[in-house]
Each structure stands twice: as structure tokens, then as C-alpha cells.
Image 1 (cartoon, rainbow, N blue to C red):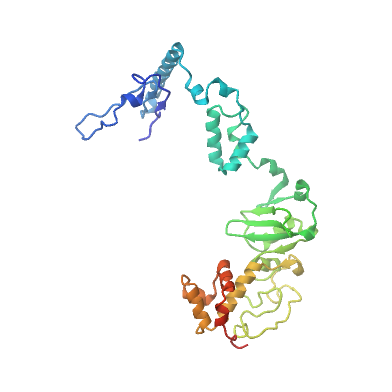
Image 2 (cartoon, rainbow, N blue to C red):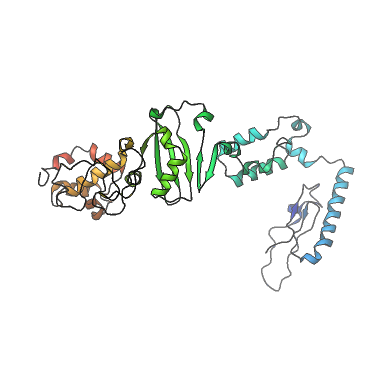
Amino acid sequence: MKFTIPRIWREPTDHSSNCYFCMVDPSKRRTGKNEPAITYPDLPSSIAPCHTAMSSLYPLLRKRAAILEESSKSESEEDVVDPDDNFRGGAEARNRYHPNQKDLHDLIIDLGLTKSNAELLTSRLKQWNLLDKSVQVADQRKPRQPFCNFFTRQDGLSFCHSLFEAIGIACNQNEWRLFIDSSSRSLKAVLLHNGNNYPSLPPAHSVHLKKDYNSIKTLLDALKYDEYGWEVIGDFKMVAFLMGLQGSFTKFPCYLCLWDSRDTKANYHRRDWSQQTEFSVWRNNVKWKPLVDPRKVLMPPLHIKLGLMKQFVRAVDKESAAFMYLQDFFPKLSEAKVKAGVFIGPQIKKILECNEFPKKLTSCRGL
């Protein structure tokens, strides 16, 4: 049941006539419909809730205000100690240090609280007079406001300008590489230091742009890539966008050589493929003008490892002892995944560290 006014609790003055828990017997309860309903006392220390309509709300509020006023007068006449003083430890606690906004912000960061939980904690501490008077409850709604001056929002992209000047780091293009990646929800770019002497810097982020050629071009133009010329790293799909290659199942998907993906018979037999020397539009599956220099593109090591392992397992004879050993080595993997060579990083590491697997291998087919 929703109450118009909830039950109001206050500190009881005595345990005989003004204590809710001493006057209510918890063993008594209503067991049948014919029995009278249990009535709970309405005391100054525990004012009962109300679920009346709004028309009868104001007389009830006046009644409750009168009860609270009478109880406060009786407490002052009897010289009763303030319960808040008892909770805070008396007058000595008032002279203690009260955290300011900066101290509270550090506490919220250490506890890892969300925005709503941070506001709840601030409200409770301020209600108990445990914080400085200058502390604002809604200060956590704009925690990134000091950093907004360094970012610009344009065409659905939020990017940073003068990042190195604000941090105080010398911008040497040879010491940094630009990592670009995206998911179904966001497109982001991160600057990584080659020696890992500095933390990663997020220069651009977007939740509106899709992963396509025009979005990557907008991102590079916003970061002034032509001026800096960092080395770029990303997955194979991102590399295809950077080099202007056509997507889907194309004949020449590689930007390094003219490897024919549709010639499945020669994929495991032919070793030498002609090098990709030019990127002319509408030639060799080049659909757009390349955005970066091919010499500035770095291949992702994780994707290379996964691709090599996949091609290696697919080339293994399915009736050989090596393939049977892989099935027994990973009993939780299905036969379809083992045949397709779908392994993750820890599984590949486990295979490379195994001493029995190389003994099961024979010569490759057709080589």
C-alpha cells in the first residue's frame, strides 16, 4: 500500500509511554477475518503513516505538527539531551574537522561510487552535519566540468585539442601510436606511448558515428592527423577502412599483397603473391582514397596470432593424430570449433607450451 505520509520516527523520551517497541507486543497478530484489526499506537516518537486522500491531508499535517511541537516543548522543559548530539558525540564532535568538497570527492573516487550513490552518501552525511557547510550535494552531477574546456563536440564526435599542452608532455610523433577501434555502441581513438612511459591518452570518442570509411575520415580530420602523422594500429576491418578497401568477401582483401581469397585451392599451396604497390580507386578492390600512408599502418599482433592458429588448424589433416590430440586436449570445445580453428589467446598459449603436440605433427599437405 502506498502511503501519502510515511511513518515518522523520532528518539523516544521514555520507555513507558513514548516508546513504540515497548508498547507493541510482536506476538499478537490477526489470525482470522472476524477478529478485530490490530491498532498500532500513534506516539510523538513514532507517528503512524497515512494513506488518506489529498483533501484530508492538511488537517492531518496540522495534527502532526502539533504533536511534534508538544514533544519538542516537553523535551526542552525536561532538559532532555538532543538525540543528534548523542549521535554525534556531544559538543566535542562539533569542534572536529568536517570534510570539504575535495575530501568528499576523493572519498567517492576511493569507494568507486556511482553518481546516484555519491549523491545519496553526500545527502546523508550532510544531514548528520558531518560535512562542511560549503559542500554541495549535486556537485557530482558535473564531475568532468573542469575537463570540458579541452574537448570539442562536432558532428557527433567528441575530440580533444591541445592535449599535450594541457598535460605538459612534449608531442613527438615518433613516440606515440594511434589505436582506433569501435564496437556496436562507440567509436574511440587512443594514443599509446611506444615505451609505455606515459599513460594512454583518449583524444576522441563518439557514440553516434558508425564504423565506416566516412566516420574514420571525420575522426582523423578532427585530430589533425595530417599534421602529426602517427603510426596507426587497429583490427583488420579498421585497416581496410584506413586503406580505402572494399568490405565483405572481396577478391583482394589484403593491403600488403594481391592475395586472392577466392582461390581456395591455392591458399595453402602458393607462397608468393605479388605486392600491393598502388591504391588506385576501383582497382584491386580499392573503393576510396587511402586515409593514411601504408607504411604507417601496424598490424595487430593478437589478430595475427589468432589468424595463424586458425589457418594452421584448418590445414591439419582431420584424420591425423595431431587433430585427434587437439580434440582430446580441449574436451569442452565442440568439434566444429576445433575444425574451424576457433581458439582464444590462453588456449593458443596452452598449445604452444605443450610438448606432446609437436610430436603428433607430420609434414603439411601438399608442401
